[in-house]
Structure formats: structure tokens, C-alpha cells
Length: 610
Image (tube, rainbow, N blue to C red; front, side):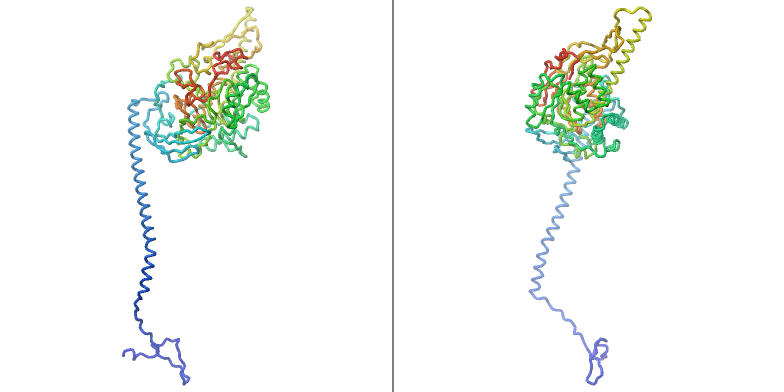
């Protein structure tokens, strides 16, 4: 054999040595027998098959699951693409139809072209506290929210960019409501916002409020500066540094369950408080009443040494009813709660106001796509429309100083809100202006007396007239078409030239230097509201015209005219007291304060007109 020719060393490995009997070591041949393949037994085959059967089903299931997920994702993506395409087409058709109906006209009020609106909003993609968007409506992106407060179940609508409701004029919005005439520049110039547009307006607005805040007692400054910081637009987060330490408070109005009422005396205060407590006592609300004496003490304690204290003292000696207007802003600013005139009565509990058909304005254009996550459950400010001129041809001559005005007869607010702070600031500034006008008028009287004495022709009694720039409005409390005003524009006032010193004024006597409504009344309060909405949310008074349902703009809830001003002027189209949107009624009878002054509510002298 071929293998026999090999030496032993070739067969045995070097490490294998065997000792021989002769004492010599010899290497023995070692061979490795060739391996013969062995066939697996039947048992082993069965075990292998069983093992494969156990492993294979899970693998197949995982593969099928992955395939199903991939197919579902593909179908969902395709459906989203198709849906988006259909919405875009529908929006294009709607926008084209609106343009055709409008005749491609220019929006005269805004001075901007009537632009086609394309879909930019989200359809119910986010959930906010108290707002659950659920679907689409018409050609726009809307959502509905169900919220329960007390025993009232309500529905909220979140409007998106594709709706004609959700934008200001600067963003291309224009009203499509019927019956609203173009009030032109007369309506535009009625508002005294005194703010430039854009970034300059934002900076100036908050700078004014910071300066006024710093003039107040130090104990009030940290809460107010914290609130101003929290209300800054997202585009200017560092405009006002956050105070350290920050003042923490609950932002919702319902956390401050105090109903505030004021009057010269406490006569009939209990009768006025009864319906408010009956409606709201079960929800934990309390009522606090301040007469003139208590109000004087409170203002002195809270604002001692500040411009507010000076203004309070000034109007207290010359126009006490102006001070009562001012007091409501100061109480709400520092304490929060609900202020309502003593001649009001509630129709339903406070915590049920503004829950029916409420609309939540889309704030994507100012606050970004995540604006819903920053929306508080409850509003921080609740106000109601008082004047809503639709097409009245002589609205200004009739005494309505703003075509779209807010009521200051009933206001609900959390403490430190910028709108209330601005109202207080304006009231103090207007008092400064009134003081200057008064001093100028008296100086002219003194000069006239001196000139007549020099000429030696001074009559026994000489009068001098001054002209007011605007008509004095009649009371808007009843919201009926005003009767013939007792004074009309221009209004002349008389001062005896025999008395060179500042004349004494009696309670209820007319103040001639400034219109009461412009000084501290509804016209001034409306300006404070509109300035905030314009600067913070880019919303103007046009957006609020013809409102027949509650509108939530950030932390501000604006109620329609029916809420606080039911009935009245037909042009305003307010509902009656039994309307579901009616919340408060102003009694048409004289209030005790009016009787003290000897003036009826239909007269404007010395009246708190609401």
C-alpha cells in the first residue's frame, strides 16, 4: 500500500513519544481513521422539525404585522394628501366666489385689497384647556368644544385662517356680515388709541404702561409688571424683564369671587345686592359695597402719594361722579372680581356668562401654531359690547362717541390686567388734561376781567363761553334711541367774569373741561380695550361689529351687545332680556345716585352713563 512506504515520523506527531523496553524511545505509527458520515436518526429529525415549527409562526406574524403597519401608513398618507388637495380646491372656489361677490373692491375701512384667503389653519389638530376641536365646517377650519361650567353645557368654535372671522384687516380679513354700512373715516377717527402700527406701537404701548406702573406704590409694581410680562406678544418676549421674584396669581376671573358695587351712600345697597347674591351665592361669590367715605379711605390707603391719589382728590372736589367711574378701574386692577353698577341685576349666574356659541379666535398669526396650549381655561377679562352701530346715519350726532363701544357698567377681571391698567392710566392722564384746560379757561377769564377794568367799561355781569370739541352724549344705559340732548355740539359753557378765582362746583354740576364719556366713561374704556387688542392680537374694532355670540380673544372674552345691553336702539340689533345671550339688565329707572344728584338717567349732567 502506498501508506506503508511512509516513515513513522510522518505518521506520529512530534509531541507523541513512547518508551521501549530497551530503554530507547521509539515513535509508533498513529493513524486517524477516516470519518464516516452518520445519518441522523428519525428522532433527531423529528426534534429539528418540531423546533422549526415553533420558531416559524412568530417570525411570520412579525413580518405580517410590519407589512400591515406599512400599508396603513401609506393609506393614511395618501388620504391626507387627497384631503388636503380637496380642501385647497374648496377654499379656492370659496375665495373666488367671495371675490366675485365683492367685485374685487377695496376695503375702504382698512385701505387694503380684498384678498382671497387660502387655507393656512389646522383642522382640529390640537386640544386646549376647555377647547376640544373636533371637525370642519363649511370652507373653513373649525372645531367644536364642549365645556361644562356649573349646570350649563355649551359649545365653543375655534375659527381658523380659512374662515372669514379669524383675521384682522392687516391679514386680509374683511367682513361679510349683512347690514353693516361703511362708516368711513368718521368711524376710524372716533377712536383715540394714539399708537403707531407695527413694532413701534407694541413698544410704545407697553412702555406707557410700565411708566405708569412705576408711578404707583411699590407694593403694586411687582404684580403689575409680572402681568405685563406675561401678556407680551411672542414676537417681543424680552420687552419687559420678568420681575424677581415673580408674582404668582390665578389668571382666570372666576378665582376672584367678589362682586363690587359703589354709590354715594349705602341707601338701597342691600336691595341692589340681593339679586346678585341670589344668583351667585351658591357658587361662592360675595358682594362688597363701598360708599363715598369708604372709597376715599380705600384709595388713600392703597395709592397714597401717587398720581392716582392726586387725580382722585382733584375729581372728588370738582366732579365726584368722575371719581366713581375711576374707582371701578382701581378696584378691579388691585383686587379683581366683577364690578357692576348699582342699577343692574343679573339674569343668570356669572359663571354661566359667555358659554353659548362661544367662538375662540385663531391666534396662529400672532402666537404661532401652538397658541391653544397657552390658552387658559377661564378668561381673565369679561366685557360686553354696549354700542354697535350698523347703519345709523347720525350715530355721532346722537351721542354715541364710538361706533363700536364697550360697556363699563359691568366688567369682570382678574387683578393686574393690562386693559384695566391702561384704563386707570388714561383716567389719570385725562384728569391732568382737564386740569390744564380748566386753568387755561380761568386764566382767560382773569385776563378778560383785567382788560375790562383797564378800559373802565366792565359790565356788572359778563360771561365767557368755551366750546367743547364733541357733543355730550345722553345716557346709553337704556340703549334706546337718544332723546334730544340737553346740550349739543358745539357746547357752550358760561363762567361769571365777576369771580376771577376758581369757581366752586356743587355735586352734580356739569364739568365743562372734558366730556364725561371721554374722561373716564365708556368711550375711554373702549379705547383701552381696542388698544390692547390691536397691539397684542392685531384685532381692530371692525372685527367686533355685528357680533351676536361670545368671542374669546386670548384671555379676553367679549360678549355680544345682548349680554349687557339687551333691547334698546333697533340699529344695534340687540336681543331682548329673554334672549339666551342676555346676562345683565340695566334698569331704566333712576338709580339712587341719580336721585342724589337730582338728575335723571336720560340726562347727561352728573350721570354715570353706561
